[in-house]
Image 1 (spheres, helix red, strand yellow):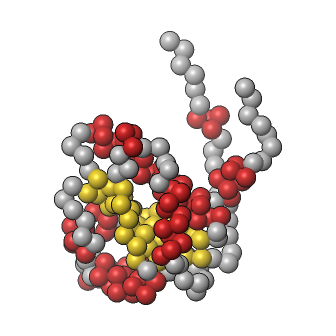
Image 2: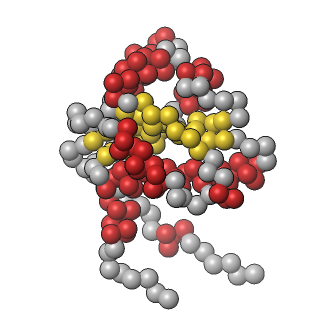
Length: 186
């Protein structure tokens, strides 16, 4: 079976999606919108239907307080820089994953959570809600886990920075899959 060369809506959204890191406009990100997007995003593949994720939403009215608390976990000489960086998004969605005991289940949980994040990102893109998945060092800091009430058996997979945008970021080309493809010749 040969794949169609016609651009489908799904192909279009996959290829058009960008990481929106800054230059968000002032339109607030509503909790209801985030929940609506997540209701579809959670249909990602998940081993044993474990659905190992949970979410913490930092609404626009709380981003300044949250940014100050997270920035305060850094050494004093980096706090101002981190505060300015964390002030950029309109809102945050923190994605937290259950950490199982076996490495196999950990890998499965992380893969499922990454798939769910990609679903969320694509759905948000359709609504011109910008997203970027950040894994800065603070996601590993026990003080940040405490600020967010993240349990011992949980991992912060990332901070999703959220905000509406007016101008789409520039496209960055990808290496063709054919260049990274091989066939096993047992």
